[in-house]
Length: 331
Image 1: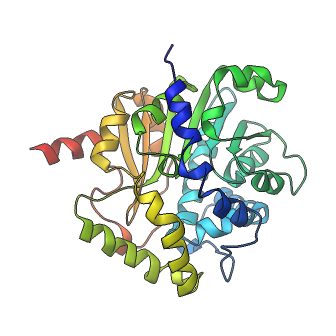
Image 2: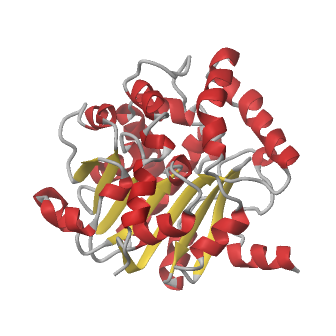
């Protein structure tokens, strides 16, 4: 069994739990970083599907403070959340058993708890955050049915801890789907150890989903995409002063913990045989990895087309095999 002692120390000293802790606590409590209006989904970009409409309606009612900040910050991330949630819900409908979902570091865990509620327990979910403010939002509508919460940073949810609390016992056998949503980039660029630690919680045929912001090989290209994000989208929800404040307070620090897609590919393929790019929005990409080609293909086949205007999508585009893209870059 791998020894993660040094990795735990690295995480404990990470920006997320230290000099960025105040920003996350303040935003999660609704005391700062709030958009001038609540982000709403552009349904024109999504399929006209009754199940999807129900997801959108329930998710909107369950959102907390940090969700609104987050979805107002990344172009069309809210639409992508529904695209992912819809695929996971349909994936569970095809499963003969319950689907266990772990959404790590995702603030108040709105997507996970909405899926558990809508599926009436067919999806059993676990969310985690180190912020008590997020936990309060998680409980704002009462104890969510079939959804649990771990109050702590992701690296403290060890296998031993899963066995130590009765409400976590259902997850001791591993998860079918794990979502890492812009969490690793708040800790360090050590994707190898981060993925190794999280992957131990995944079933052998499970799927690990990533949503992350990546460095670009060309710094000018990276900055141009940032300008597009900030002034083509984010300015709809935040004033120029708030955009600048976050850029100095959070994004400059976070940049040091971002990795390139090529570096991510090396870390992912150390643990998984298959990985596909599922989404792109400027410097943000979604990935889906698994050792089960069949399960990964099933999940991908259930996804609607990316719900984002073409001007925000860059190479490599969705449905590209990450290994194929990485190989092409080397030749």
